[in-house]
Image (tube, rainbow, N blue to C red; front, side, top):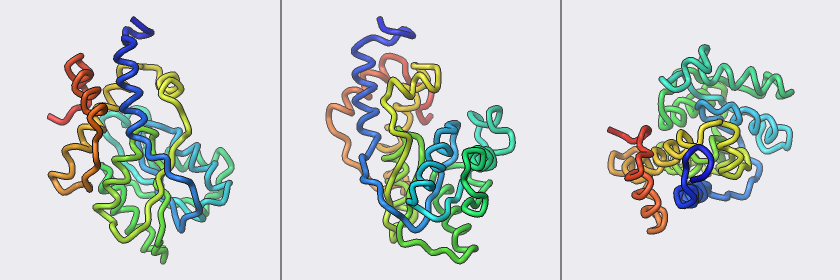
Length: 219
């Protein structure tokens, strides 16, 4: 057994899924950015860094609350993201806030509306999210906003680094599994475009679900 009761095989399977979730997009300047709300304040950290690097002029931090973020971000995900980015030196006039979105599709469509209200109609968007959410965010944006060119970004972390930042190995694996299930199932519901899922990723998914990493699965 490894740390937190995760076996070596389970860790390898989790890394297989972690790597699949990340798209490896080459970062480049975009007309605007969207910071997708979640429990992970690292999204706001990397947003401030990428703005400082000149990759976008304005970001919409998007997100209200969910059962998993209400205690951590009582004023809403977007509000806390904004405060954190400003504390890191990001100028306030480079930040717009959208506080109603409750899922990724709403993050995209509501942020598009906020940008339009400010006269911004981007041809390219930098989606900034948790490391394991890149693929699902991309697939969702391609469905909800097909005409925009999408580049995905997140903190450049290894799985071990991310687990250490969250402090709960089993929870992180559960979240990897939950996002992968949504990548598989959401295209059938019209929420996202289809993504190819390699056999080794599906095998890792099946093994981990059978091992009980299932708290974030759709019911």
